[in-house]
Length: 102
Length: 235
Image 1 (cartoon, rainbow over the protein chains, first blue to last red):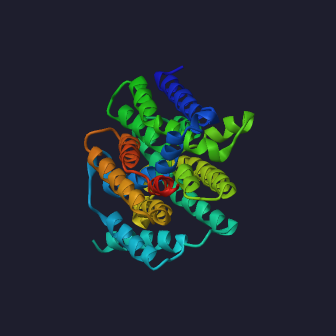
Image 2: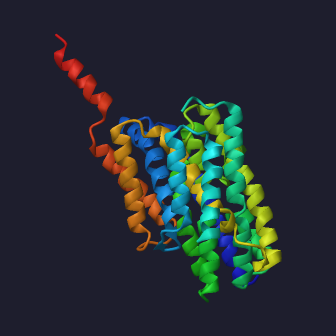
Image 3: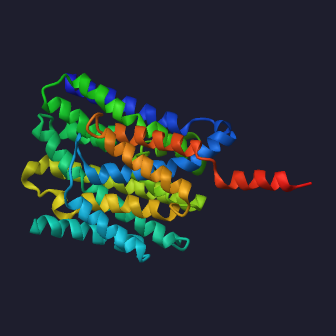
């Protein structure tokens, strides 16, 4: 087997093991009050971090580009309570248009 | 925002699935450009199936690094899926072979879509639909990208990268009704952004998220304070 295939299979086995470990932690670990508070905070913290990285990161550098324009449109639409898909499609359209014109 | 119906959960999940899956084209093209063959590109998408890890792997190979160094980088980045699993486990309530199957689609998008739902059944629906629609499209588009190489246009031309960010924000939005949550969100976003130049891709989300959770724990939660006051005035 070539070194590439060995490396691919090692990465596959390891990444899968990490995924299985995460969903296999016993439920009683999460019954503790602090664990419950942490579990409630995780969605807000992770979603916010995901938004920031998705919009600002380009590999390991930070860039201000059309994605920020898309996010601005998303914020404006969320403020007027637009539905989810309208927000998403409008953000994509704004970024695409920004790139076309920019 | 009013409580979403099953139909909106389905539409939203498939929307994120399509937007994310389209990125498989850029992965397939990049993988073959870095010297892997079409089968190796497809094997990475089927078996590793976690975007940042896959890009990191081909990045190391493209830079002339040892393939096993690519594996190590992929594992480091894949560690965030362990934390996603911790958050998802109580909602998914999976057993046996179903858990082993579902684990493969524990990724950024399925986690975000699932954690965005308040109803447990809809959280499961969003997880499976998003995860598997991304899986199918990501693999299909990897094959297309690997075959077509760089001939296919950049998905960024269609603003799909901005669409994913907007989707995450739309999921976060209804949770920002109280100040502690807003502080946690701002800390999470700021910490993750600050970490981007200093850490490999994938790390800022995990570390930024953990920093924000710790910050949230240090803030005294509103309901507990009220309860304590009530106890104090009680005879």
